[in-house]
Length: 127
Image 1 (cartoon, rainbow, N blue to C red):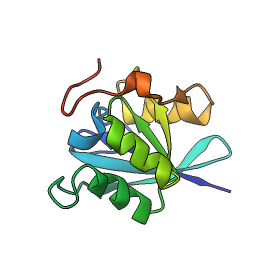
Image 2: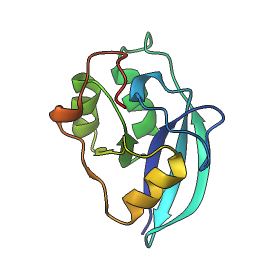
Image 3: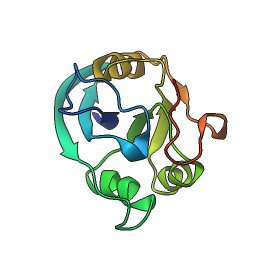
Image 4: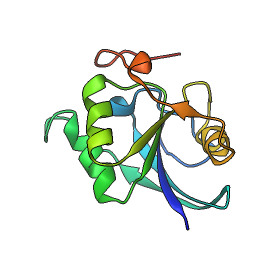
């Protein structure tokens, strides 16, 4: 069984792209399908503006596209709570420079749950 994982990414997205370190302000999402500890497919997904539903809009957008896991470097408390409500597991991946490195760490079980300790105010970046 595969898992659909979203990674906030810098344009143009993909495995070699830099991670977009703040979930709500990334250029694009890389959506990967992880099966048996490996990336078996990936694609990109456009972001949606915040003004269409505030900080809930990006979370709902990912949920509509089947995302079950989000790898993030930074996000606010409201979108974190929204992910939890919609059944999206958020993992902290702020220590990885590229989308591919973050996905590899996730597939190997090396990430930790994204807790309120990692949240930030709107627009601030973790580094």
